[in-house]
Image 1 (cartoon, one colour):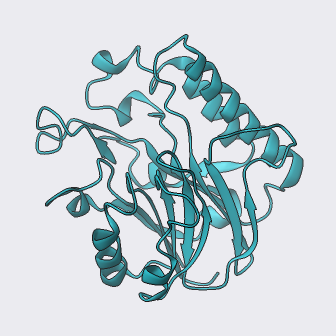
Image 2: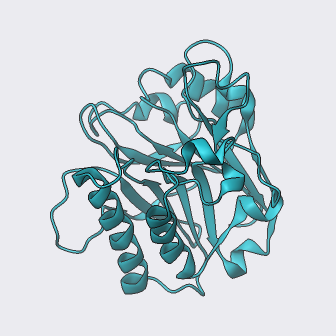
Length: 258
């Protein structure tokens, strides 16, 4: 890639937000958009509508739940769905593709529900599989971007009230540690470089006026390998997309490179 704008966005049902998505793409014209929580099968995905605004789509869908995609204005090559490690997994949460020589991942990490539950164990195992995939198949010296909804607030700076959230599945040391093992493979938290003070969020609960009160968490991240990170010029959350009628509970996170 040369100069590029990449975004990640948990749309919380692409069919419910398709109009908003098309309008956002027309306004912002990202080169690449990673999507999560599609809540549709591959066959239900709106390929034609998105092609109409200039985007190819690589999709890993699932009926009613989960689902990830990568949209790009350039050709998507070598699309890979899931971990490719031979172990069965019924949840569509990881897709990657090569775009102009850069490997881009769109990830939707499990929420985990309750600490100590089976779903919590699955979340930790899922992150471990992601770390294994990177070690097995990729080189941290290569240009790689990993973006998505990680369902992890990396530090207390990423939580509006750390004490209230300290024991949640989004913040406990076990999940932060599991994500840190992924990052240590060779990634830089691009957004954090531009906002080291924290306090910038990407998700707000629909309830209790959380968004107007800015009671949010930073759960959506963009990670890039070190050489690629040096070319980053900006990173921001598009809070405007969390406003209006029927928004997703997540806002797009946008990163720009030269």
